[in-house]
Length: 281
Image (tube, rainbow, N blue to C red; front, side):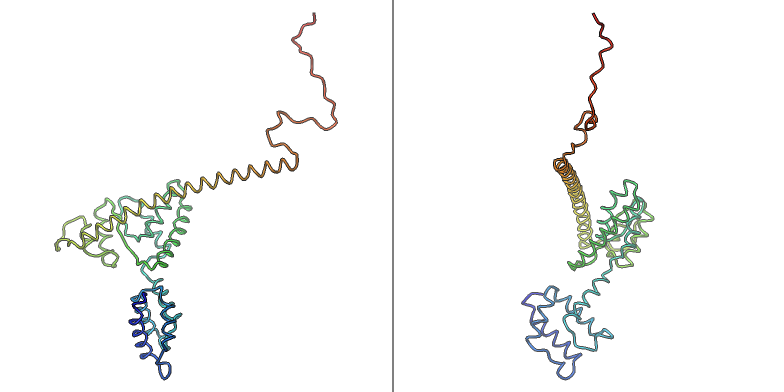
């Protein structure tokens, strides 16, 4: 919230206290309001308003005047139910994209995590790919929720028109994709109004987001590969340094520094045998 929104927040809080409180609990002092506002400043006024409303109808907490911790908990609960699929469900959605005939409707985090895992899957390591996907997906979802970004669904279109229409219609019914966007992606003609300019702009925005996301994923994968190579080179150099340091400290030569095994201590060296090919004159 911005400082300019303090008055709106204070009026909202007064209404909640007037609704729930009784006796001295119906009033919150100006200093307490300021502390309340500061505690919830990281959140938007709309988010705080929704959380206060959720607190009022909560069967347990709604009997008591709210504290900042109550509102933050309501915000976190709403974030956890933001419509993003769980990690196992997300994997089940993503793995269908292996079949280029299938149309897949997935979230931005699901698509990005699968792009990371697909490089492992291309090596034939399905178990490793699933583990990489789950780790990336959990991290991406946590970052999105921390940034309070709403869920964003998009369609990855397959070449099978029949399966495409079925998946898109289900996505429209589930509220994952807006109806005008789905209409623009359907394969066959249907008796509906033409796509609006707004829907066309939304479709173009989705395509642009997918293109930018793919470029960002490729750049990140390349950077991670370079980092791994640099880390491996540094590790090899460190191992070599430790071996050389050990050899200097103990006096034991490094492997390969002797052309042959050294003579045993105190052993007499035999003279070289005469050349059998040498003929005495």
